[in-house]
Image 1 (cartoon, one colour):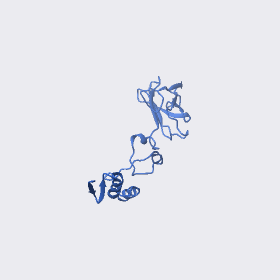
Image 2 (cartoon, helix red, strand yellow):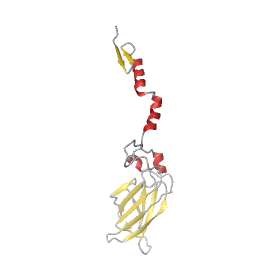
Image 3 (cartoon, one colour):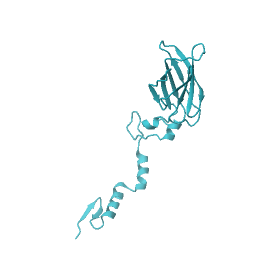
Length: 178
């Protein structure tokens, strides 16, 4: 004789336990196809002042930069258009104390001219490149991108008179799509 156990009006027996557990799951939790719809109907989005469900952005949502409701994980932040995709600080001797997505082998191609290689290529040469240099006294050199491709950029620096010039330190950041 088999003992019968009742859970939430579903009979669970030793003889037919799998089918009974299937019915038990359905009875307690509902139709799996409808659970997602039911959750969507009752969920409340989290804000800075209200507790709720926090949804994270995917790469395409980061690239369009159109939502103020989605959270960003560190690995996806780089896909936002306002986030620099590469950056570096280097000296006229091409010592590189900081590089993000740029090879630490920066090539000096002439006075005030340096070629940087990206570790991850850009999708186009439609890139914004703010650059500048400064010497030990704080005097600035104005920089610009003279040659830009999806994989490299040559930047040049000029002194206040417009002459190509080296400085103690150079700085560059690159914004675009990778």
